[in-house]
Image (tube, rainbow, N blue to C red):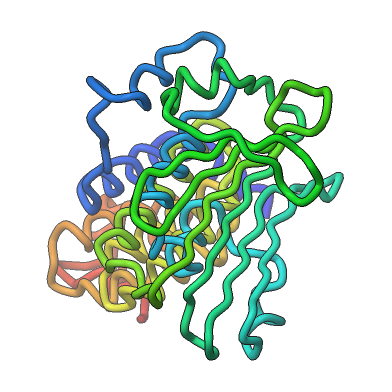
Amino acid sequence: MKSRQHTARKCTGLALAVLASLSSSLYTPITSDDSAGPQAAYARSRPPALPSDTVNLIYQLSQQPELMNLSYLRYVVGAPENERSQLALKAKNYYWYQEPKRTLLYQLHQDGPQSGSVTKSVFTINVPNSQLTTKEMERIFGQQHQKVFDHQSHPNDVYTFGPNTYVAFTQPHDTFRVNQIQVGYQGPPLPPPPQQAVYSAYNLGRNKAIEQAMKSGNWSETITWLHRDASMRPGDPMVHIQLGTAYRSGLMLNEAIAEYSHAARLGAGDPEVEKICRAALVDMKVLPPTHHNHHKGSYLAGSQPVSAAAGL
């Protein structure tokens, strides 16, 4: 076992390079035009009072309220903690918490005339320790807003960026700092989110997870994303190679061997797939080095495919 761990650590650099290369070849990074608009001006501010990702999410949800849907939000802010318990309810309330202090980050309220039909939707972003003042808010979102008071008599600055939608910034009494942001919709039944938007959100979230894992060495979240990849495209050997590489970098060697072996079976006859799988399995001591091919009884003799060589 120690020998395997030493081998895995020794080849971690190669594994990361393979994962990065495969990631860039399989997915096109999602980028936005940062050269104009309030989001771009805000992104260049120092220091930001509100993360640029949050600013972009506010604009997206207010202009496309159909994106206030779990099939989209799960790839942007993650899955809510109580998703399963809301399935049978007409009026749904979802919650996202941050550990370890169980801080409530997001809420989503949805309601309609019947189950599955959403005519009212409110997505809440809680920012209890923000430095977002009215002046900073106007610098980011503009000065065209209304000042109203909610049922708790808290002042709210309300913007309208699209039909039937609003964005409300709430300030508790005497704080002069925004602690809650709501994006709300009320109107005709919302359609499901566009598939391209869902795919783009998934793509961006996945690439960010891989990038962060390559910097931090923590592959747990990346493995979750790659599992989703494998379930969405079970017949793609490159997806299983990526998952195997992530396992290998996290020293989960048995799981890595299984994924490389499965990829080899799926990609039998593809020189690129066989080359990657063979190199990984050799490095993990599952297969002998190729220079042993001339030995009698070697199961890598000749041009035998890696899938067959591994007894798969």
